[in-house]
Amino acid sequence: MKKSIFILIVMAFACEPAKKVETEIVPNEIGYQISEDGTKIALYSDSKSTIQVWENYIKAHNEKNIETIKSLNAEIDFKAYGPKGEVFDGSDAHVEFLTQWFVENTPKWKTNYIIANEYTDKDGKLQQWVTSGHDLTLNVEGNEVKAMQVHDALIVNGKVQMFYVYERVAPTVE
Image 1 (tube, helix red, strand yellow):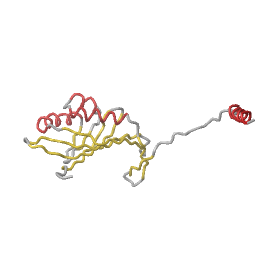
Image 2 (cartoon, one colour; image 1 turned 45 degrees about the vertical axis):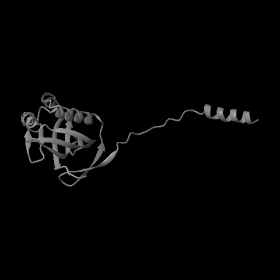
Image 3 (spheres, helix red, strand yellow; image 1 turned 60 degrees about the vertical axis):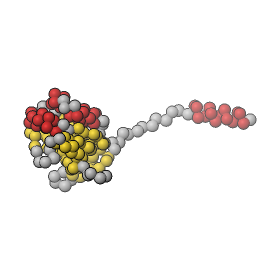
């Protein structure tokens, strides 16, 4: 008898038509961007493709590979803002600076984190940003100098369009 009841229950569920489950993909809101007029614009987690661009960019810097850096810079309207107020307007200005800086300081970055986010601005344009934190080691006049950097990079069509570097000297005691 118990076996018959079990078979009836199994048949009842097996014969029930499949239910269509509709799932809506909801982007993951992670915070907000504040526009110049004070409006809060939702920030969402971004695809990892922008992270890959930035990882390749940092790798090229560690390898002092000027050609790869130049190929990853946007061809039009590239801009970079250095930690001491430097502004590099155009890829050529950036590459010119790096060429000399690499020789004089032999920088090496160790990545600690990378976060991708995106938002749509008031004009309906998608903005995809990568924020990353790095330990930077420099050789300045034969002395090892350690700094901590945060980068905010705008990635457009797989290229670095613009980035900001924020820096502080690393503490000697953690």
